[in-house]
Image (tube, rainbow, N blue to C red; front, side, top):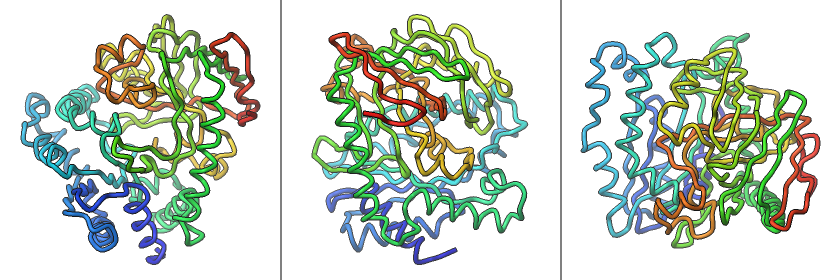
Length: 412
């Protein structure tokens, strides 16, 4: 490990990713194995951002697995009120809070466990944490997600080398695609964000009503956009004007589909992890915005559980455009982690939409958002559907057809 680069990564994650302000509390959610990185980030936050306080919440997914094996289902579903309340106290304080999520998950941490029990535990936690998610989904506060290698994750990505070598290879891959390798992540990210914003502005200027995605796998999907939909990308801003980068890395330009206006069929192009298990080679057929048929070569039952979470899970809340020239895609690496794999490919998300992807959405009520076609759900699961022969044609509000993607690349 190159500790100087890791220190630069921590500095970038805090100062540019989350961008905390002096009056705020920075809440860091971190795996126990990466406590050293949380401490690095805390030092940066105190010394260079002058934050009021840093609060670190450690997560132990191995302990979560033990609990899922041995605990009664009713206990798994009983999420005590103090768990969300502890975070809400900071969010509701005068200075508010912001988040840095550090992840290093084992893609198959729950493999072999009762999938229904896992799903019940996850859904119960999502319900309990929904008031907190409202802050991030509406960009009321800054938040950012960064990843570091764990041995189980690295071995999954690089199964043909030793565990030690796999971790080193994953470090290199993460630093490469997160623009850390050159030693100036802050400067490189400023340039990168400007490029994504340029693509975002061009597609917003088209005033699209829908897009039509096709490729040789059989994808033939028409996605109508929510009323007043706007395309977002790269950085975001809170209502106070604080800029942040939610996902590191990020290559996408995305918006909100209309929950009742997706038609056709779509085929997945990369495996994705749901509740610690893999779903591979999925397909889904839509009618009036809703999944009416689906299947998968592996994990079809998991896909069914996801879609049955609630009514909104059968609709899509996001459509995102990512060129195949993305650095993540060019590595040829399947990361088995949505944070990376979604930024290698165009994707859709089953479930909740970001209210910020429609005009005035962050201040609109739930009923107002629904009337505009903005989907609502307990889940938001990104699934990859892009390919190197993806074609995307947009239809403007005046009925004009515009070619947006050809052979998986921007052409506008």
